Image (cartoon, rainbow, N blue to C red; front, side, top):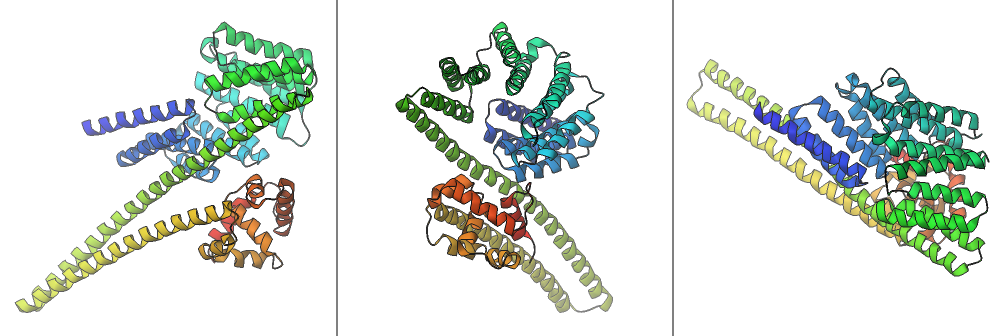
Length: 486
């Protein structure tokens, strides 16, 4: 009992570290802590801690842009007994699933999950529930502002009003950051509706509230002020705020992606002002940061995939352990059977020795088979990992041997595609291979020395040949196609 209590304390500490890592934008650390907590929780068979560790794993994988894996762990968390009793965790999982759909450009599903989170918590007025509902209302407002084909400003402001209602019930001192974010979003919405006075009013409210609580993290406020003055064509003021935002991001944010947006705006304004040297300088800085983000993202994704593979290997080992038990039971039953057979027939000692020898040989053969299968599995896993890394490097280098090697690793790929569209050219099959491996349009353009528009048009033509719906991700479709049993 004391041992189990110690395990619970260790799990809770790991979950706390995972949550803290998320607040610091340390997605890999969050995944590592959550995975360790999950392993311990499985041993204790504690459903609550298993569900929460799955949630943290799913959240970190979302931020690492591994949507398929994130959705897998959301499913695991949702399936836990504890989750079915905890509506707050259900709402958080709905919110997380919505964010995955947003990344996948599935706008309507994204909005449905946000509404689901609100419905789950409609009778809850604790601080956590109010905070979740306020975020969900904000996301629905932004959905109507940015994701609908026809921008719906009336619905946008209705949802912002509902968000404000939730925020008013929260203590300002603790939740002022969320309130400031709300003011900034509303200000930006007024800017989109060309109501500049109202926009400035809300942007100033956000800034003043940050000042009230002496919060030095002001890059969102500075960036929105920059947007405001940009649309007012007061480019020098806009430039000043974008530069302040960039400095503030460098000092207080771990997300370099925020910096690229600022540098793009700064470069644009220098272009308007006719200062071409500075325009090019910030373009170069922006490109440099984008390359750093891409390199780090690739490294993080590889590391995260290794963690996921380790998790799958652990599950495989559990299945194998059960197999060992079944084999042991079978061997014992065989032993008992032969023993009583010996007694019944009253055979001599030689027969008994032969029977025991036979059972022993059976056990050894079983052990040999298990050992052989394990070795084959390890060799196959290593071969797949090596082959995958090899074709990734060939693709990046635009090596002529890329597609030949790709077909060796994925022999069913071309066959299945040609069954769907027999007239595919080799260049189209190669573009499909790049997409299957997860490369973006920009990646393919860079590696193959084509323009982004050329690659986009070719990819669009392929979508038509495959009859893909607008919301379908072509990379996921290709991988699902190859994963299907022949």
